[in-house]
Length: 166
Image 1 (tube, rainbow, N blue to C red):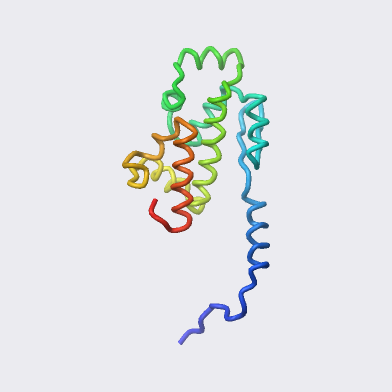
Image 2: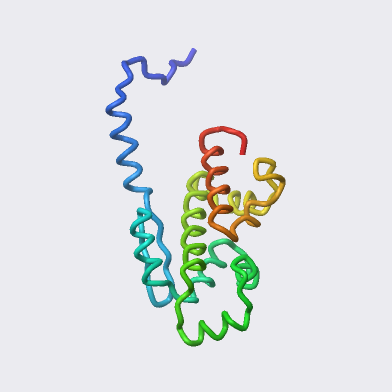
């Protein structure tokens, strides 16, 4: 018979909270790296400051690489014509506030999803493209066109992380 590796000592909630806070410090935050800038945020206020400054159109390409889909598909998500994208990118313009917010929130969602799927990016990418009962039978990826849709996918990932229906 093998010995059990379960500890039989008293549970210390303060120690557990301390460990969780330390781990959260390490994993909290998101980063968007474009060829010309690096944007890092770990709170909604920091994200808001980035949104007010604006992010470049080239961030759409970065997002398409991260989400493993074409730029054309991302442009459809944010309802932007290809010609507008090409012109604004050439001019090195900044995305509108709404489009910037969609990009940043999607980056946060991708970071969180990869964390929930234990750094197995391929499994997370498959999950994004598969229809989901908890999301009304649509794919999580199809909901990334609005902040509400992104929040619903985030909620679904949160339920997955804690073992609920997702």
